[in-house]
Image 1: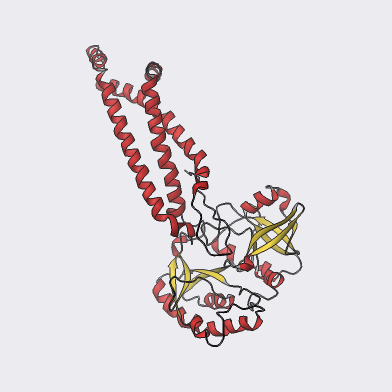
Image 2: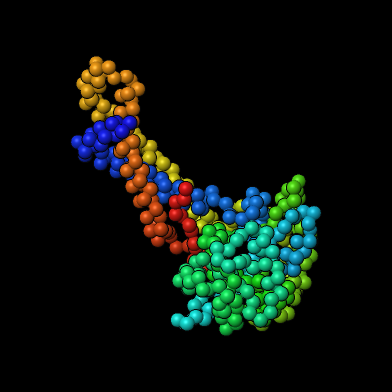
Length: 405
């Protein structure tokens, strides 16, 4: 085999133009497919890095005359859902994106706007998420007084604290309220949302400090609401679970909105009680499989990504056809050489092994250049992503399109 490789290297150097053409064609075909499949995998195929994502369901509410479902609930509704243990093995809640999701973080170099998210006490333990530095929040933090513990995202750690390991047990001030950083979360963990990452996650004890109201009694300009996901008990299907929870959650709606309306300093014009309250209580519950998370990018660009994947797959097919033609044409030049080798007693396997060795020497650099090109250009291509059409109060989209194994 070593003799075959040495002979193959001599042929590569003697046929530079042919070898370069093969290597570049392979690099283009494999590199473009690697990049596009990385986008496709991140957007459509990759599951959330949480416990049992196949059995994870998102609570939705569909009202009359509504185009698309809502996924926001009051914390007291989440507490009721948790009590139905005969239907759900577990449930967690994270604060939904709204105007109260963005706060001022005071640092030595100035004030930065960061996104915050209040999570339920069992959030990290049920999702099975571990910190890459320090620890995650646990149920004891939900009753913390004084400097309330918080965890930050890897993106926030890198952007605002330059990956300084001394961030642990450091006091940061959000809205001029002191909080104690106890951990840093993994980069790949975004929560229920697949492409939006909160900078700081806080326990429910922080609600009163940031909004002036406890988590169970929301007030202020924006109602403190939550996105809820749950794991179904074995033998329970999503339709049956939704039908059971619809009357339970519906009858809570009017008093909850009335409580918020009474505490709100500047309610939205649509909440003109009691005329509009019938609209807010007239809905039904549905459960959506959430193993892949919720994604704005998926809604807007999934069809485009699939079409581009098909296009580059066709490009790879064209590359293969061109390579087949090149090798077929080149093999015609070697009829005399192969005939002489046969005459000297070379076996069919010996000749095939020699040809395989030559082709592998061309394939290896082509594949290597293609993959390296994909890794280096994936982040660059994200800059060409069209401007997202999104609701207000939403952070920039975070899409991990780097090729993985």
